[in-house]
Image (tube, rainbow, N blue to C red; front, side, top):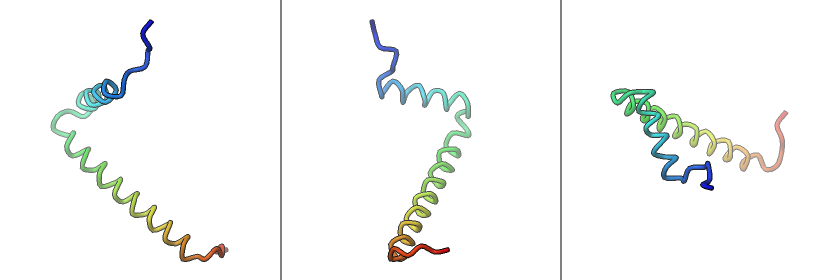
Length: 62
């Protein structure tokens, strides 16, 4: 009996087709660009938080 789980390449293809159907071909590049910007902002904020923890020298602020 074949497993019900899809392989990783099949999963990616299904997700891309689903995104294309939901957002349409015209809005998909804009959505991807917006997601990329959000991820960059999130990563920079996480680095800033890590930097704050390192400069804190173990002291917790109240």
